Image (cartoon, rainbow, N blue to C red; front, side):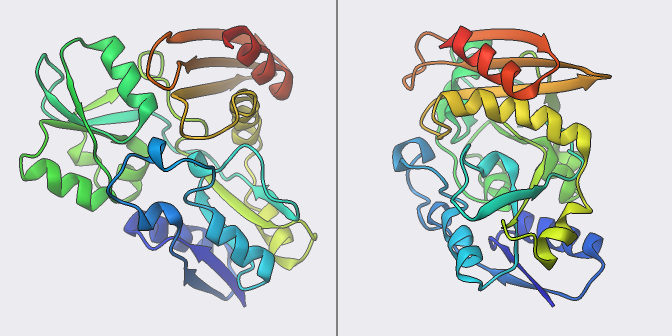
Length: 278
């Protein structure tokens, strides 16, 4: 029996069940409430710290209460606790952000809790009213439908996984709205003990997704890897060549910078582009 740790949202549970089916062994899902789940009334950037959606799950892994954790990779800090490893990155879903609701125009009330999205939106369209939006996917869609916002921005991958692709009004191109590091991908975390859960997880590894996301996470690591800095990175692999585009600004949204770089070593590529933009 493999015990899988997961957050309790509809999307997190979909992801956990999806991985459980792929493991093809007897599993049980343990729901763990994280700090990020408990604090719903302030922007994530003001909560501070790293691992808001992973810390309690990682503690359960280290304690042996669970054998394997399934996360949205974009929630993972750039450094993992000692004793844990990112055992597998399955094939990535669509990494783009999606617009749900009315088209973006001057004066539109746009719901998002992401600094990365907010800063890039303001650079794309002047005169938007960016308003805080927290909660799981269902909660965010309900608030939009109630008229609290004209438009909201969510990760396309989550909507597609929940069968809500029909709600998407527009996919935002990655060169216009650079996604969060690892967006669209799942992270399977285990103890770094080469045990049964680790070996099982390794069977779900997707090499091209791992290489691209390694470059993105190397970029993130230079900036400290928290959600207090507006930051995005997206890498694509073409044969042996990696292309990385990235965005970063100051925490208040000032001094936004973008850059692109091509190379073959994901860690060097991410680090080099980060130093250029830093």
